[in-house]
Amino acid sequence: MAQVILNARNRELRGSAVARRLRRAGRVPGVLYGRSGKAINLDLDAQEFAGGIKGISESTIVTVTVDGAPYDAFVKDTQRNIVSGAILHVDFYEVEKDRILRAHVPLILKGNPAGVREGGILETPLHDIEVECLPRDLPERIEVDISGLAVNQSIHVRDIALADAVKLISSGDQVVALVKYAKEEAAAAPVEEEAAAAAGAAPAAEAAAAPEAKDKK
Image 1 (cartoon, rainbow, N blue to C red):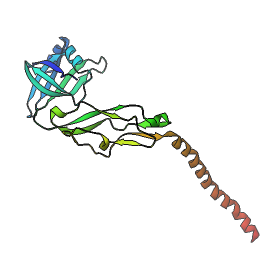
Image 2 (cartoon, rainbow, N blue to C red; image 1 turned 90 degrees about the vertical axis):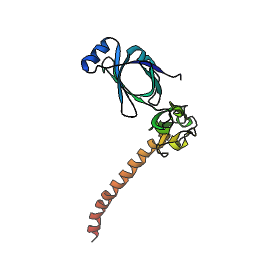
Image 3 (cartoon, helix red, strand yellow; image 1 turned 60 degrees about the vertical axis):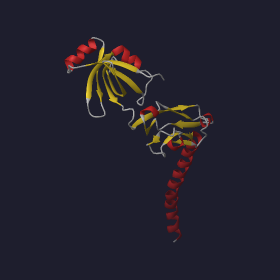
């Protein structure tokens, strides 16, 4: 994916009234937070921003130019109007090129598991993993081929191949995808019902036998 470049202006004035005026003018107020704690108030063209962030993930590094000065950053939070979907505010988090960072990278599952075609059910409990690396080595997304998964098989985080420069932080025991055999689960219900019925019949049989024993005495 080509580097996303977002042009912004330094915003000296703050407050809700200022933010409303910016939105009416087709701008989006935002803040760029630096690693040292410094924050830059800015505003961006609403249409350019909405188009620029299409298809990016939480781990995508974008370039934000503030009055011509470039900053590498993550789009950390985008607030939207719940009715219209219009972007109200955006937060950026600056990334330093030579400093190791941690980020959550989304998992993209590819393929139709063989076990599903055999009647199994696919479960995908995990949608991203945490990694540690330099910004230049950070993947935007990680593709996982699940087409070979058979019934009662699973893929764990430890099975994911990562580049040598990328360190895994998430637990390797976490399940990414698994296929369960639906027929086994369906067959288990009647067996359990039969066992429960048999357990209930035993006390009834004992109670019925008790009067007969007294009569014999």
